Image: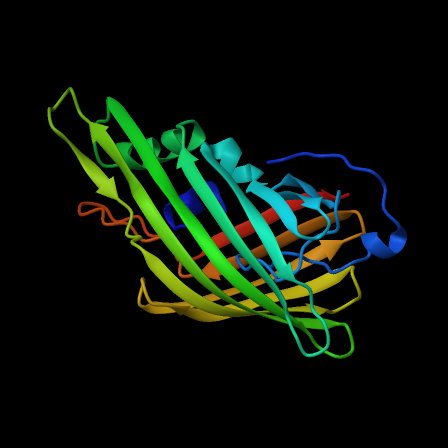
Amino acid sequence: MGKATAIALGVLAASAPAASAQEFDGPYPARLLTIESGELHDRGRGVVGLGDARVALVGSRIEILTNTIADAFGVLNAGFKLGVFEARGDRPALALGLKYYHSIGGLIDAGVRRIAESFATVTDSDVDVRGWVAHATATWPVPGERTRVHFTAQLHRPIESRFTVEDDVAGGGGSVRFVDGEDVSALVGIDHALAGRRLILLTEAGVSWGLDRPRLGIGLDAGSENWRVVAGVLLPGVETDLASDPRDFEVTPVFSLHRRF
């Protein structure tokens, strides 16, 4: 997602009929840190919890998804992922996806107001964060079944990423805009099993033409077959255009605690 929504950190809770153990042990993970893989969960399978949440609806062809942490912070987001074809021989798995986000106030409004109050007397504030992200991702399994390589092209179109503040005591007010902008990026990701499914290393690297800088990410996906925790960091962080008191964040954290079902 976009940089402004990262302040809230980058759904759907669903139950489904039981599948065989072989189906449950299918490709995992279906998402790295920001990169969606070219593969999807089997029908009725997915994850639910804090952070990444999703469920597959039609075979392994369609997933609907959200990030529940962003939802709780006041940036509602929902998307879908379409599996074009599965990996076969030298042909990679390929998936397309689209996600929309829109702020509704709540904790993100309180957070950015607190930032503004550090340099002004704020009597009113308003948050407006909207946009969408589209991607196309191909995934190649590496012989040995411990490593998969992913290549993705992403387009992020922020419609609005700002908050306004008003000072009825001293008069005036202003608008603070997060330096975001339309972004086109290409990334390569790798997920590598360090200790089977118990510990998986997630890495991402690429370039953002919209931000004119590289994008990097590293994290770990750890836990049991059912309960998983994902933690990592992304570069670059969040940059604002606050003239009086810049509040930039060097890295963007990534976190998810969820149950596979």
